[in-house]
Length: 67
Image (tube, rainbow, N blue to C red; front, side, top):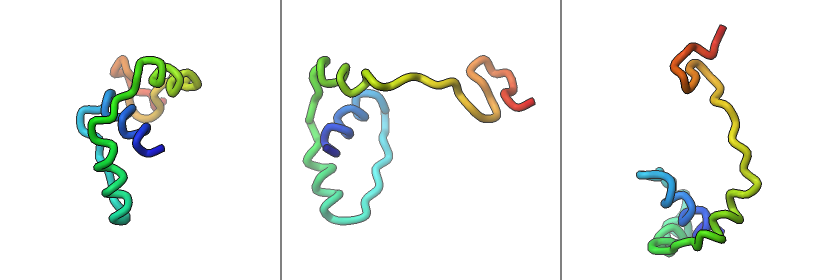
């Protein structure tokens, strides 16, 4: 499953930060190199996602979101 997650992430992020807690995690991450998802697989993974508005100190428009 981590191969799928890393393949999806590599299509969206320019530099994913990956942490390793064991040698097995390193091997698993290296095994995901070069894995590509089909457009159908990507659509399947993204289908349940619903974007949410940004929360915190700044909004997308640059106005303060904290009042």
